[in-house]
Image 1 (tube, rainbow, N blue to C red):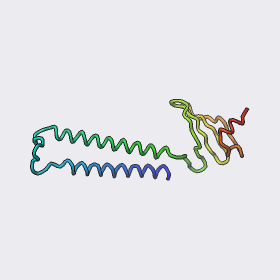
Image 2 (image 1 turned 90 degrees about the vertical axis):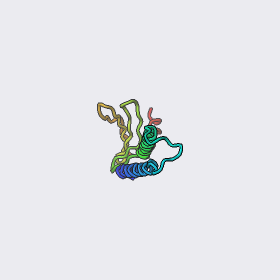
Image 3 (image 1 turned 180 degrees about the horizontal axis):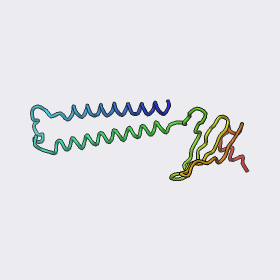
Image 4 (image 1 turned 135 degrees about the vertical axis):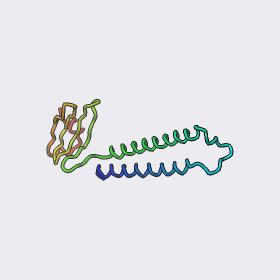
Length: 140
């Protein structure tokens, strides 16, 4: 599943969930035709305020859950687009990271920082198919 279809799926799920939550809240918060014994008087502000706070809490919990789900879907797996594949990436700081790219038969180690990108190492041929850790261990 590519990134665009995942985003569309998350957006559709978000819209459907918000519509369902709104319909459920509308059904629950309808005022009865006759007063219920022991209920707050109709002129009280506590009833509508409590419903509003509970509704807001439900919507915020729903949005938070959907954001968590979208993050889990987005971070799962490697990003593969055409000839370039992101094999791995490691964050080195708040704004710096190292990314290992597969470009055809070559693996390219790239440093990414606010100043730009810089090629750190290129592995060609059969060494490019071996795991990167074993390649580092083989170096003197």
